[in-house]
Image 1 (tube, rainbow, N blue to C red):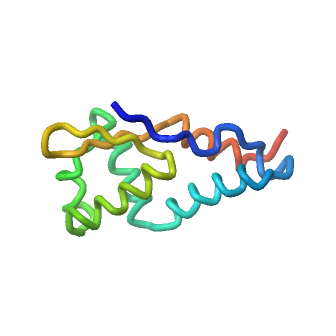
Image 2: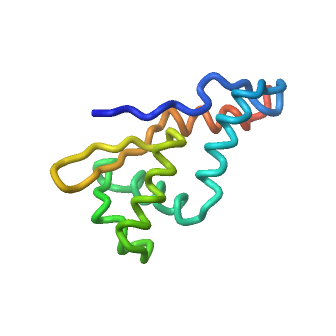
Image 3: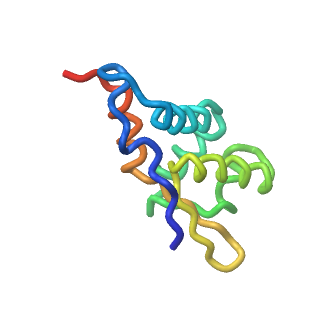
Length: 112
């Protein structure tokens, strides 16, 4: 199973320390992926799925978009390291990477 890059696991919290250029770029890519409401919705659909994964074929109807468009959105989420993709025959299945979401949450949480 191919793995996606973990986006901001190494980043300091934004509100407690200055990010270096690489950390800022990595975090910005994640925010760009999450800046689209369709992608946020897709992420929530996958996270809410009974097995924690969803086939691309099951994601088109809920968002009302064609399979190629949903695939484009899923690629953006995968490139940002928020989901992982597994090919099973003809269909791609996606799973949310909780560690990546946790890293994003930690990066924007004030140090306390």
